[in-house]
Image (cartoon, rainbow, N blue to C red; front, top):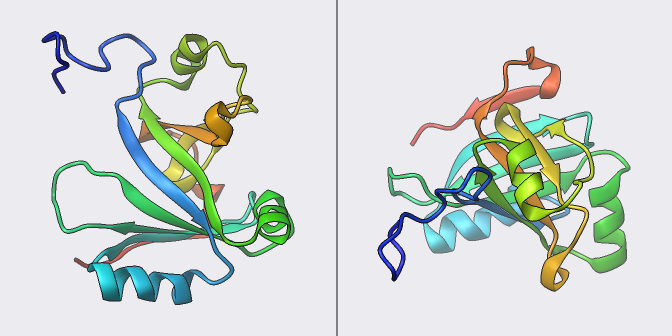
Length: 161
């Protein structure tokens, strides 16, 4: 991405590379996904359960083959923060996630301690920022899956295009 002044955007260590996903907390990912697939033509790209977080994550993508932001439907499957969020606020926007090369550099650049790293969706190292700019929860995720063994998810399914 080239900015107005001709410099390459995101070139500083820790810079957000792109929006990875926008997350919506839902009670039923299957039901919610029908609206996005049926009316907007999105497709299910990944569907996984992250048991440590007590959630099911369904990623919906457009038809482009270039790197793109996805919609993440976050369904609670056990008591936890997402279940509490829905109970207190109802279904709706949960967070915006930015892809970064390295979480440590991104936290330093953001001058934010983060809320602790974890292995999240698609096996990637992730963390939420402690601050909520403009009342929006921000997640950071590394670009590549981490090299941890697979207990990060109960299952991962990459859907056929």
